[in-house]
Structures are given as structure tokens and as C-alpha cells.
Length: 408
Image 1: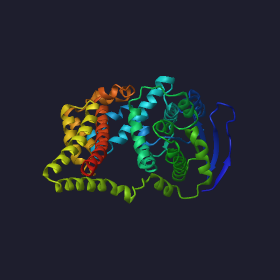
Image 2: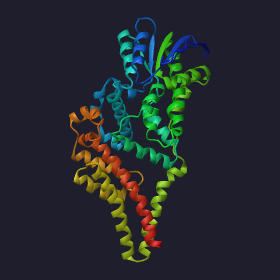
Image 3: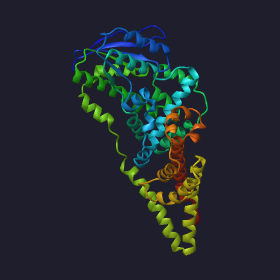
């Protein structure tokens, strides 16, 4: 696909950067927007005011974010049993963390993040234009971000995310300014990261490549003569650069960027190595005598089960869920295919099944930290997160305790 450039960059301070590129026979106008700016909404209205200016409108959204933006009640259809069984509870929690962050922004500055995307969608529909979703699925982006970090940075991000779920702090002026010039995902999740550079590749540069490839794919398949692409200002230069430079087939590049690299052999083997060590400590304890062996097992159960149960209790779980976490954690820690959080969340879900109203109120209630305990859907996710963290801490604390007990 040949590429020529016809630039129309906005030079005035405070104006939304805009650039028009020729992609093959098509003309693509990249509008860089601030996700929290009323001026960006007005610019979208200006460009889509007259019919015939464009044949398609592309937005910086994936399918799940698009659905959440246009249909907030879609959460009512969430199958929590499937979420827990498919090990997606942490992803749902991450999405809700982003939603809570955005709601805090909206309450603080009076502009809903993504308002310009919603406006572009509504105007495109009114004009009868197709809406092109060109961003990568948020779940894939977050999984690739996790793969980009070492174990301790990943743990720091996870713990920071949990803390962010419950934050009552206002969004800083620095973050608001970053949103005006950057990207909502980067700004939101960088809040929980130790080093923002760890997130740059999956959250920014990879998505620049992905969005450019998606635009090329849509143009190639549907032959749109003129396309308006509404993207964050932090992506406008990168997407323009990728449109000028990309030479690989679009579908090949998209497939590569949508894949999640499998964990390394050492990472896959590590949980089983922990199991071997713990079971070895049990066996060694019994070689020192039955009393020593049973004491070792008792300490393992008390520490591992106790911390997981404490996490469940901290999340406001039902007493039977707390008991279930206590019983499950010492066993699930010896079976890496299932976690204590899955068991505890499943029990909580069976005992306190969310009502329809809990789903409908979820987005509003999680904006306040108390809502995470009051809303049954959010509380189930807290039970999963807290009991998981408790069991993980219990595994390592108990392991070191057993080593000290047997060899100290």
C-alpha cells in the first residue's frame, strides 16, 4: 500500500493536533484529542457537522471499551461464575479500576473521559457512517504489559491496582495534564506502576502500531475514500509515523500484536518448584518424627489458611466463605492449577448471589471506596483479590517459617 503525506497540523496552543495522510487511495484524517477536554468534543462536532465529509469514523476503542461506553448496563449481563471459572476475575477488576478512575475524573473536573469518542460514535450513527474500532482489546494489552515486567514489578503493579481500587484521593493535576496530552490507559495504570517505562511499549508504542494496522486493514477491505480517526493526542504522532512506515501486511501485524507471549519455562516451572519444596519440607519433618511432621503441617495450614481467610474477612466475605478460604488455601497452594481466590469467590457467589440492582449500580458505587463492600458484585471481586493475595503471602511466609523451624 503506497503512502503519501498531506499534513495539516494544528499549530495553535491548546488546539487539537490534526494531520491528514494519504493511505493508498484513501485520505485519513488523524484528530488528536484530549480525553478530558470539552474542546475536543467541539472539534469532533465541527468535523462531523456536514454530511459527506467522511465515509467512515474510526475511534480509539476496543470492543469491550466500546460496549462499556455506549451501554453501561452491559455489566448486568456479566456471568460471574464464568469469570471466576475462566480465571478472568483479575481482568474484570482491572477494568473496574479503570472505570473507577474515570469516574473520579468525571466527578472532579466535570468531563467524562472519552466524551469525544462517544460524541464521534453518536454523530457517525446519525450520519449513517460505519464506526471502526481500531484499538487493541484492553485485556490483551494488560496481559502483554504484565509479561513485560519481572515478578516483583508485576506484584507491585497488582498490589498497587488493589490499592487504587479503594483510593479516595483526588486525581492529581499532573495526571489531568497528562491525560490532556496523553492516553487514558497509560495515565490510569501508570498510577499503579513503579516505573512508567515498563508500560510504555504495551500501552503506547504497540497500540500505535496496532491502530495504524487496523486503519490499513479497514481501508483495504472496504475502500473508504475518506476516514476520520479520533485518537488520543498521545497517539497521533505515533500512529501517523506507523502509517508512513509500515510495510508488513496489516493482518500479519495485527495477529502478532494480539498474541500474548507464553510465560518462560522457568516461570511455568516455578509454582511446581514451590510445591516440591513444601512437600519436601513435610517429608523431612516426618523423618524427624511424627510430632515434628504434624507440627510442620499444622503451621502450614495455620499460616497459609489464616492469611487467606484474613484476606476474605477483610473483603467482608460471608463467615462460611472465610472458613472456605481457610480450608482451601493450604491445599490450593499445593496445586498451581487452582487458586484459593477462585474457591473463596465461588463460595461467596453461591452464598450471596448478586441482585440485578447490584449490576446496574456497580459503575456508580465503585467510584466510592465504601461501594466495593456494599455492592455484591464488587465485593466478590474483592474476596477473590484479597484471599488470593493472602494465600500467596501465606505460601512464602509459611515456607520460610518451615525452613527456619526445621533447620534453624
